[in-house]
Length: 231
Image 1: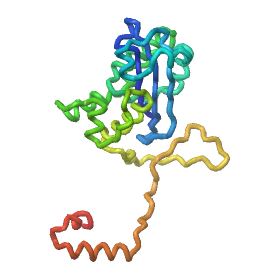
Image 2: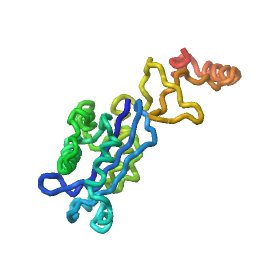
Image 3: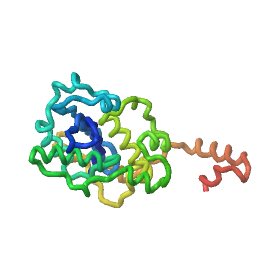
Image 4: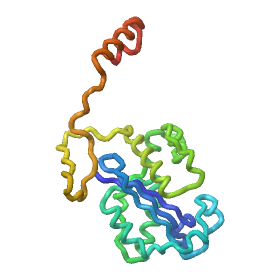
């Protein structure tokens, strides 16, 4: 299962009032595991940057002036995401901007059902609690200290960690499916992605270490919490 964790930065709140996308960042997951593949693009919005937006992401007119306009990168972006599910925090915001930009180019729109909104997931799991990306980082003890300004790629990387926590933890899904073999040396990698091990690695504890642990726990008495795990 391929998923793309995605974020955008813009000049404002409404594409139909002249606001544009200025940055797209995306991280690829396969079976809920990061593959190392990313997409990152700064975009010339063909308009000036409002001060309010600049204070959010720090992307100014001088920096964006020599970046490609959206019509030069739109197809490459669509090629990257393909038909993968898009994991987005507050998906309605990013989707309206992406589809507006694609529509102005005459490119296919991204179906709304292709997006999974982590903001909605968080509000269902923790009703009444703050559900911003920063608040979820605090809840899940995810380090976001480098997030002094909003940045699409950094926010995507952080959101990938938050998303995996929201759906039940950072471990890959348990699956009974047959796991494809990795390509042999010299073979074409194609669309191969890393998958969970079909057979867990054997324990590295020696018998002496196990016996020493058992002796240590035995000396702690019958109420020791370790007995719950050694049972």
